Amino acid sequence: MTASIDDDSNTPDEPNAAAAAPPEESQPAPDQPGRWAALPRRLRMAIVALGAAAIVLALVKIVVEVRDRSDPVDTAAIVKQFDEAEGGSDGNAETELASGAFVYNAKGTEYVDLLGGPLHEFPPEVVTTTTGNDCGGSTVRLKLFEQRDDELVLCATEEGDLSLQSFTTRHEFVGVKDETITTCPEATVWPAGLFQLDTRPKATVKCTASGDMVGTVPAVLTSEVLGHESVTVDGTKVDTQRLRISTVVGTKGTTTYGTYDNDFWVTEEGVVVRRTLDANVSAKTPAGQVGFKESYDLFLQELPA
Image (cartoon, rainbow, N blue to C red):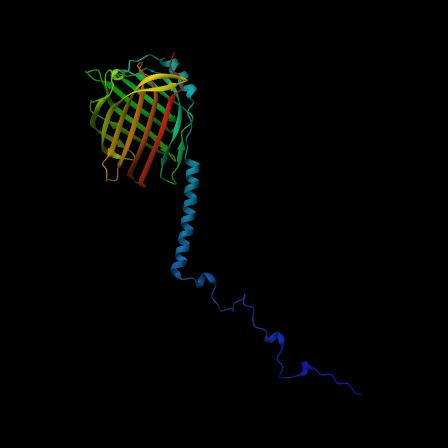
């Protein structure tokens, strides 16, 4: 018996299996365009723009972190320097505040929506120095950071009141310094016999504010006696008179407008045992419209001996 074997490989009309297999789908034909090139031109431009914006924002963040500073002050050194140079004295809360270097417990923040919007939190201790001045009143300097301070200059009037000669605020954000000075004609903001008053109607005066951020704009200052309140200082309650000095800078509805509310709690001896500020200002600057907010609450650590 003869066995026969079929040889399929020799069949001429049978296609080769490997040659018949279709190309893999994951490998496009050489003439097929890439995915990036296949995207619409506008979409590609938008993606590029978003990438560039992300890089710019990252660079701005780096600049803010490197250049922005909020260094706490050495309160003990300031007190020592003041005591050696000036020495403190009692006031009478009428025409002169008590002079001295006073340390306060502090809470609060300042914020500006410029270059990423740095936020500064105030240190737990800040210091104020109060001295008599050449115009018969008092100059009060508040040091919150090395880069942030206020100066309030009060002058005596013929009636024995205190008038605001100037109020200066200094800030520094991301290495950019800003100073605003508000000046007023003679007008009562700190009435004579302040501690003995129960309340007093609001007194308003038109002033001028000038600064790097706000330019030169009108300002309206209002003073109001709010009445007696108790404040606890180092565990002891003391009687105080509360005085509010508010300032409106610029005109509502314009590119520069803002408010500052300063409250002072003053003892019969002329010591400010508590002080608060709430500020909210928006102004047009070379960098665009910039908003600034600040709030703090200061409590005196101990009464002078």
